[in-house]
Amino acid sequence: MKILIVLTSHDQLGDTGKKTGFWLEEYVAPYYTFLDAGAEITVASPKGGQPPLDPKSDEPSGQTEATERFKADSAAQAVLAHTTKLSEVKAADFDAVFYPGGHGPLWDLAEDKASIALIEAFAAAGKPVGAVCHAPGVLRHVKAGDDYLVKGKRVTGFANSEEAAVGLTDVVPFLVEDELTARGGLYEKGADWGVHVVTDGLLVTGQNPASSEAGAKAVLSLLRS
Image 1 (cartoon, rainbow, N blue to C red):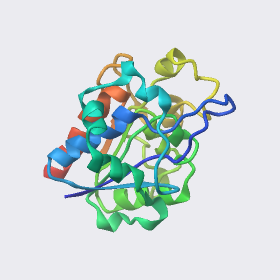
Image 2 (cartoon, rainbow, N blue to C red):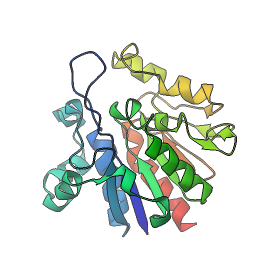
Image 3 (cartoon, rainbow, N blue to C red):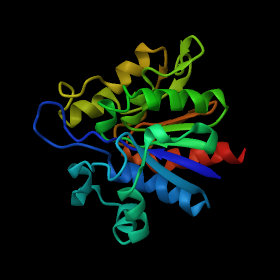
């Protein structure tokens, strides 16, 4: 079982002068869920190398059992420090792909031609595609035939109410909830900050950081079915 995890390389939070990147829990919870299930994991990013970590996700309030495990795991840290360039990976070499969030993907992965083509290849090959929190935004340009991949599919992602709660509604390039809906997705949400994962066919989406582990488990369920 080979799983590809795709992280952002973008570290600027719009014009605020603040840093962003990937969200720690949204990466490490799926990473360990897949690893403990026996998966062989490859991590990629647009620029390769060490992806930028959103500093807010490393604050004490954001720590979980998975983040603490990661901080004591030199092997996992080495994997993260040496991500493969996204342009060099092929869907044919993997059984599933998973996109963790953080705000970074809204700027780079959502517009990245290699990422768009990669997801289209996974979908065309009948392989699971997972994305959590802001990462469902990377689906905005992804097509399945003549239609958007999310059209007519039940999906979730970071809710407008959650974006408002963190005060970034006017900073982000687009709102995940609005964009999924505009592309014909059947957006649904659970309680803000609660676990909410939606599986429709081979597409798995999670609403927020708390949904990361459950989203990864949903991908594993598809691989085992």
